[in-house]
Length: 110
Image (cartoon, rainbow, N blue to C red; front, side):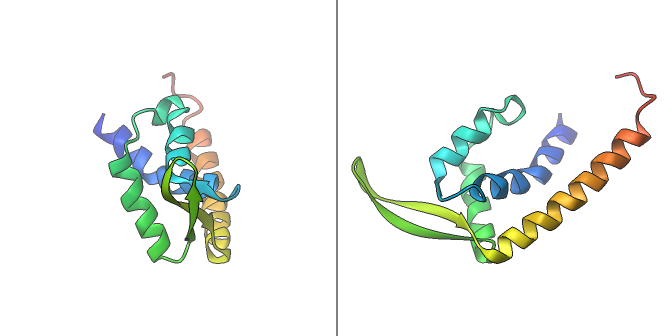
């Protein structure tokens, strides 16, 4: 189980950047999107918010405040130009790694 958790943490940043790259998004919408995937169903706010802060501090995402009809203003995230370049590089690396793993384990019966 620990190895699965470590692997999920490794790809969570890429998934979050991918969701944000689709357009401005509210944090609870990011969580909903992640939770809709079985393997990420257990994602918690306590995991997402520090990640969003790290991404912002690294210049990969930006946020803006928007008024809400349902209460206080909400923080919406969007990807920066630097974030787009970073995500592009991550996806290239991911595809290369995925190919190597698939090729290396084709004869393993899981």
